[in-house]
Length: 299
Image 1 (cartoon, rainbow, N blue to C red):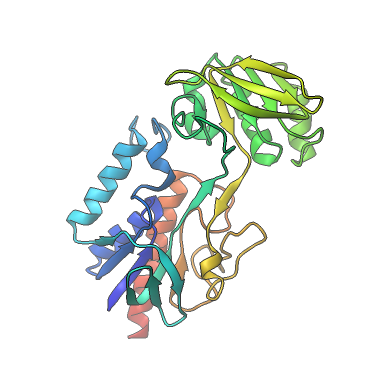
Image 2: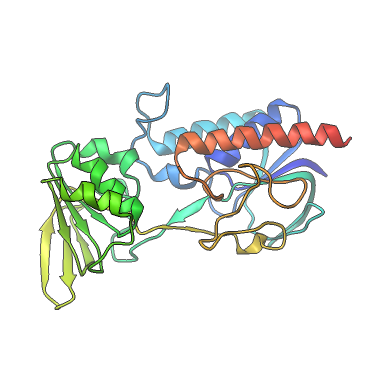
């Protein structure tokens, strides 16, 4: 029997563990892949308060070491199902807890083209606010048609020399407010009815190959590509204990509580307006603190 089982070893999950361990709770972290979550792929983090610059790998490793040295137990197993009585079933074992925190994050939707993964942090990014400042006075492209892509274009237009906004359709899904702002930006060029079909470069992105709906193909020389085609949470295994929205994110009553008593949510996997490192660790600390408080109240 554990006091708290945390599903996911990204920043939200590890921060939850940190707060729970410091409260002298018996904690188990379950992670299907590797600790760190998406942040581990960031070449540099320069927007976290109090840390001038650190790689995503170093940040995640520091947090992981901090938590495990305090006594948190971590097992690399895939969660298959969670029952309302706080039983967690994995591919290897079955565990029981007094409280569960779901912190499984969300994966950035990929283009699924060759060299995409190996060029992450080397010209390919999924977060303009995280990595935009590395492209001051350079040429960048954004791929996407929703509010995130439009907002990224506006954000990067104040940093980069030239911004290409590439969208596979001729109309954007985003709000007109963003479009009006974009039309007033001289350094944003719209590239519509176009798909990215190749990423080019040796150890760093140098250009992209694009194809329009008339099958015209050309190369676009850029320094950075920001992919903003959405995120993909993996919450289907939790639908018996939580409510999810149309995009697959977990609905919370107040940012922490799910519809099931004793089961909480933290980080990018929940419905929220801003998915950043700062909000992930904030979620983690709040979820653990409330879980501990309510655990005491039920004793």
